[in-house]
Image (spheres, rainbow, N blue to C red):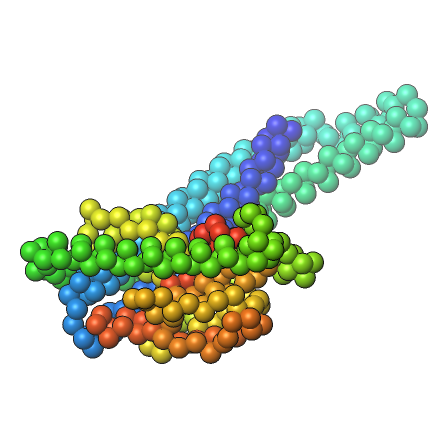
Length: 400
């Protein structure tokens, strides 16, 4: 009897932990799915719809490819949710079945004990057991044993029944969720059909552009060269500011005042929580070396991220600081560098700038307007963060 009760209690203790872990995973997947759905909506409004204003086959192909990648992720993510929920329900049903078996055994043992007690006249046996005590203390202890045994038996039986009800209630909730996910499966099927059509459009565009692939590659390479020149100029400006802070010494890091150190520390502590530099946008190019989304044989490198936003979007500072420089480089649009201690945030591809060099700015202060490209109907901000002269991944710094 004691071993059975221990086994039942272990099962009871494990079930809530398993259920909580599974629920957390499902919740995490649901949050990711919502983010992806929001991104797809932004792709439609910021990229796909804009491309209809003026046709540019290369740009259309980039936008469509980006959307296809996100939709494939969304479908995969939703399927993971459904599979996880199915597994969760199955595990809980198995646990309930085990509990029911153990309860049935306990009841049989209990009935057997009652029957044997009746045959042996438990009341008389108990009385004789107490009267046969050698002293009063022993009789008291024996009486306590009977009371504790009866109380424990009732508590365990009550606990088992209560937990079985809880697990069943949890399963009922999960079954409702499964019903909701079945609706998502249907939605996924619709998305798959749309995705299939979009892939056909993608293939048609690829075929139509295959003869001009070398021209497209040249465009990409020209953009990369121009970006590299701009990055070198930004690097020069930061190094120049470092020399000035160190009074022309050879140090490669900023010499900061106590106020500057406090500002840098505050900036660092806000990693992952910095506001976006535009009110509405989606990241269409990540940080670092990567394969081009359309011309897979071409590599592109970025020391920041590219954010697609709406036309005439305002650019906002991600943290308080001082305008280090305003750069107008040949072949490029305006760039603003803002210093936050030994950190620098950089805002490229601006059509207008509303601040001056040396000006103090607050977090979320509007410093300019993003340039809109009429040739491909895109409005994109190139955003970078540096620690002294080292480029950091801005996506890890802004709030996700």
